[in-house]
Image 1 (tube, rainbow, N blue to C red):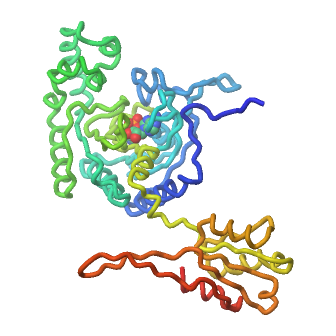
Image 2 (image 1 turned 90 degrees about the horizontal axis):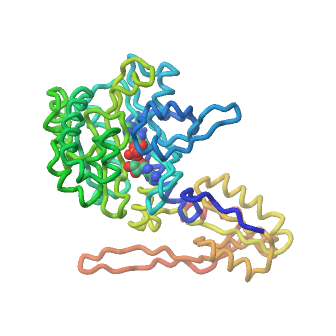
Length: 440
Ligand code: HAM
């Protein structure tokens, strides 16, 4: 029979990586709680028009990356390629935005038909934040500080650089767009095919081109920054000052324009050089016109999206799994019929008394040799041996499978010392929970 495989670019999360994902998700939940942000969840499917209007017709995402299909009622639907448009739609629909302040976050699956490679997938996940009703720049600084705190929580702060730019007001950007079109028009023959097309649809995106032949042309192009409106310039300067006051280093990157059309003023990306080509781990910015564009009342907004898979890759590069304590504590072996009958209730009683205990119960029978092998393979620190004769006397044996190693710091030299427990002991079953309580 021919094997049915997963869809290209859509990954399974396997048990060996689950601990890293859980660690990251827990760190995110702890982080957003400490900033008072509230969770929002929206459907994975939305009407196609939401993304066409929200993200912009002339963006790569809408032009060629969306999973769009007709449902059985002949309505065009799209699997969300990003989170912002859906959150704005929900905010308008439920009256959360107008004349209010909202600080929201989400952790969702997203879909883009891109060419898969390391760090770039067709189904991926984002941690995102969207803030409404605040003009900034104080809140612009807040969400950047929030991301910086996450890097510190995860031990990634040395590997990420903050890139910052301002796109100015919509009017200033429109005026600049014309200046840019005039400039590139003069050099039309030096543009590659993609950029010649973009000149008509989305000229700012030409600045994003990675084509080495066009780099000097792009370097010499007029800079949006020199055409910013006064208010946006002040907004940006205040933001920079706030980041400096908070001890956050940044690079001003005039070529940073972002791939979605809704941005104005502040845009930022956190980049790393540890992931090869897909080095943007987090990107976001201000979108003061989006709520009105999607039919709501004028409401300022700002947010970011962070690629979970990319953060996981960085954590793996740092061998974080070695620090995550998801190892099994005890493996309960049962030898003989009465032991086998009682094993589950002994295990349940232990879980009642020690909710934090990680206990694996042997299932499927087998002799002592087979069971102890399993116990060892499970990575447990102790095997609990519930054996017929000992049980008859109300006892249980505990075999230490692994010693915990501790690094002892000597004033003179560093010595690795191993603290090895007794190899095997037998204790009354009633004392077992107390014994374990002292050890874990
Ligand atoms: P974005 O720049 O399209 O922005 O995506 C944000 C992040 O998602 C990227 O920096 C990257 O880490 C990750 N990402 C994007 N595409 C992929 C992919 N194919 N595979 C893996 N990771 C990927 C947005 O989506 C905006 N909605 C962010 C935002 C929220 N701006 C304001 N609010």
